[in-house]
Length: 169
Ligand code: FEO
Image 1 (cartoon, rainbow, N blue to C red):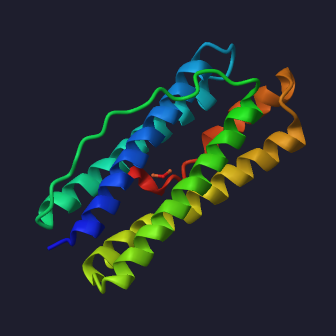
Image 2: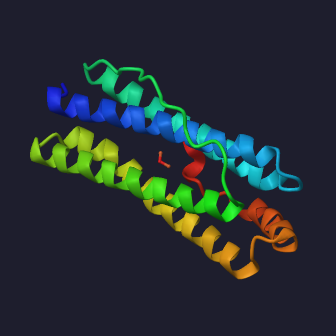
């Protein structure tokens, strides 16, 4: 059984994962109307789907542990970006924020000796390491090849090889 505090904190994470899905969905929609970056667009759409999976995983966990998962309302995310590089930088900042929030959940679980929740959260801890590393790699590449037209073309090809997003399970 989840404590009230743990349940509230997990529900806050449901909101954060739902917001993450919206944030990347907005990036995907914006990328889709930029010419010639179909793979980057697909990357953002896929990322958005994965965040929804992260949210669902939490919802099931809360409900299975005797709590009640609350479906949140959501604020509108940022809709446009000055450049692709800006979008990826903002993706990294967002993931860093998510990581802090996951770490906070781990602290609460340990504090409460809630080892089942602690164990459940380990998947998210690993996922955040992967996601942050991936975002940094992509930003490094963008810095190297530039986000002018020809650089973006290469980056759009290259991102096809990137599929390490934790499988979205
Ligand atoms: Fe579900 Fe990218 O954090």
